[in-house]
Image (tube, rainbow over all chains, first blue to last red):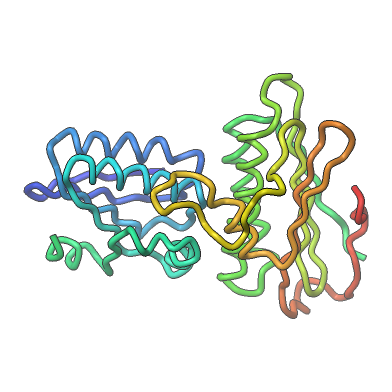
Length: 110
Length: 155
């Protein structure tokens, strides 16, 4: 998985590319830890280029969400492909993740 | 009858990645639409990850076996591994784990997306997860209906 990080004020934007599964979960968790270490309390994960996710990837996202909450921050997911979004629906994770259409909507929602 | 693809993978993290590359190609070729392709890929990925996580990593010669076959109207596959099984009989299929749990969703995603899911034990140490997914009509891929050559109910 390729992860591009950028910072807009106190917002960390992580643009993910590739598959989010057992092989990439730890890479993503590490990248989000680095963002939180920079005192970014607001985190956006742009999943526009994530073409595949499985339960290991979902577990990584839950782990990151808990870390963000523990840091008294908040997190948004954006640009989910329809089939990726469906996995969130199936697992009911739409109840804990705030999912936005795009980065613009996510930034204005903080 | 159609032939069955069979590939053995060593129990390594690299195999998880390679297997998913293979599953992506298989799914895109056998499915009649993008949604079915995604579902096949995620089911196979979950099964393989499970086999990797809970299978024998100590002996050094253990393998994870993938078998797959598609007929006119369904995709059939098995992931067979040495060591730990995939699930036990205490699974409550209709509920997902607490939303903030980081694991426990894979087997339930499989159950939701498959038409048939069975766990089979072979001998003392081999476990098989067997799945079937309906494919709709795919005349362009397979000319004859029928079963899978080399695939029996008890592997």
